[in-house]
Amino acid sequence: MTNPTLSWNLVHDVQELLAYRFMVNALQAGTVVAVMAGAVGWYMVLRRQSFAGHTIAVMSFPGAAGAALAGVPSALGYYLACGVAALAIGRRRGADRGGRSRDSATIGVVQVAGLALGFLFLSLYDGVLEQLETLLFGTFLGIDRAQVITLLAVAVVVLGALAFVGRPLLLASLDPEVARARAVPVGTLDLGFMLLLGVTVAATSQITGALLVFALLVAPPAAAQAITSRPGLGLALSVGFALLITWLGLGVSYFSIYPLGFFVTTFGFSVFLLAKLAGFARARPGVV
Image (cartoon, rainbow, N blue to C red; front, top):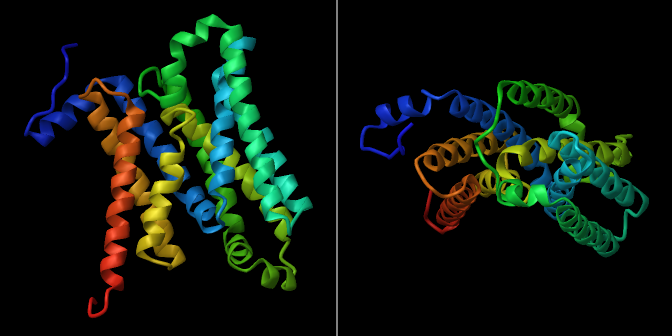
């Protein structure tokens, strides 16, 4: 395999991407996590829980490092750490509805503790230090068929659950007091959504890395909500942007010496910036 280079022939470049099994696996896995992150991230941004999502993303770092130290699959560490963090944050929110500042403080403490544990696990097991860049910033190498199938199964469960609770969750997100008046179980929905967010973060971290999972969770839905406030269209745009960012990131990363996370983050920021500029242009007087 020679060093791949981009050409002016897009068809040839795509054919070169698809010629290798590991890139096919990476594109399939990236597609799965992009759809999941785009949908769940749209609700996360709408509910203004980006800080909580970032904290759960950080927790995937000690989860993977701890799994390596314990000699178990890293995916198990991702899911356990993100799930525990999601439960801790969700239960704290349910127990303290009115204390937003205290809620933020709790989330911040969880985040700092997670980073400290991650670096402790790395120092205790020297072997994982060689994989620190991959752990934090992601890679498209080493994704096998079994991992793709597992991610697909997780996505089906998460998206199915999200579709089932979508309407009451939307109401609880926009106006929790009205939702409570209509007998919507707001506390249960809060905790359930945090669990869905934790599972989504754990799955996405395996592609983007622990620190850059936020690029797929925030940039696409934030861009979509800058363009439209309509829920259906916003969800569709969020998923579409996430797919675009992932496919471009994987494609350019294959032809580059730079890590996948750099391109995913760069394209995510670019999409968000363009969407904000488009929103400002539409808001100007006289602009239709």
